[in-house]
Image (cartoon, rainbow, N blue to C red; front, side, top):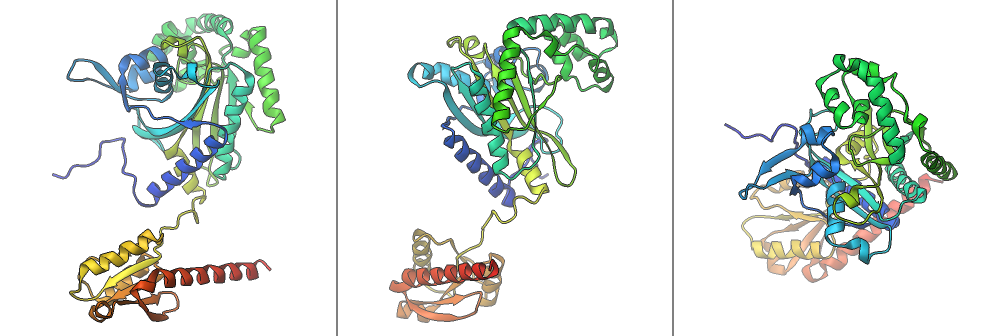
Length: 439
């Protein structure tokens, strides 16, 4: 019986793997332009970290975490999200006491949630994100939103819709939760069991219910904007004015609450529909948090962050044809040994070309020269280096241009210099042809 990958996971190979690297590297470069530095947290954390931070009322904690007991009978969880682990790292290593504030970090890696696999979403998935911790200001909130929007624009994603809302300060949320309880109380018997639990633990979570009948009830629920304190409203209005001044498009969504309990004040999501009409939902999301750092043993400071799903980004970029032309996996050189010759000599030639910076592969199997040319063609190699007994005896190689079929014999001690000259001439020819085309 063959063993397959676990349901909800997938193997990342070929162009998809190359695309992931391209996306992650681009996002990393932009984050560092904004002054964010990379951190890495373990894949496993004590379960208490997520229960305390994400919240017992969230679906993540109640249904989706991969949790197990280790050999010491300690409860361990595969990280379902990054923010809690990042804050744990910051607090444990006392980074807020030794760094300029806000402390700005970025991360990338896998996370795990036991949920229904769907378009661009898996039970093991990859996220890139940032956290800015230590200062509570609308300007920092704006910077984080601008950073995320810049990343999506740099991937050539047009018509990104930023949905934004505020959950208000503690006073606002207290008043709003009471209003929601009052509203949902008469309907509660008809609503799903999850909504019953949410009603007791955190009625804001009811707004996130996916049951169609419950969604109809949610439509008539009070809006948070009607329960904002003066301070909360002024801060949100100021944030929107900052985004207006920076020409960042957004849409206020009164129903947006996000799925994690640590959020407060600003929350946002990035929605996108591909050119072919596929609705990918949220490519990423984020928000502000007031109590999370203190809850995990740190000082009483705020933070804000976001994450983007790499699988989602890859799917929509591929769907829209935006990855074409970014990947050059073509070989510069394919080395072809003929017959039973000195393999050590061939490997030295191949290694020398690689160390000189040329993308080089060699044929390791004993096959005919015609088959080696076919392999070089499949790899889209520019040049072939042919080595037989005569070449080894004379300490030389044959260089063949696979585009023009021209070939010449070259002393081995002049190989790198000759290849470099040929590559430079080829680049100049391509540049000239491009200039002619452009007039």
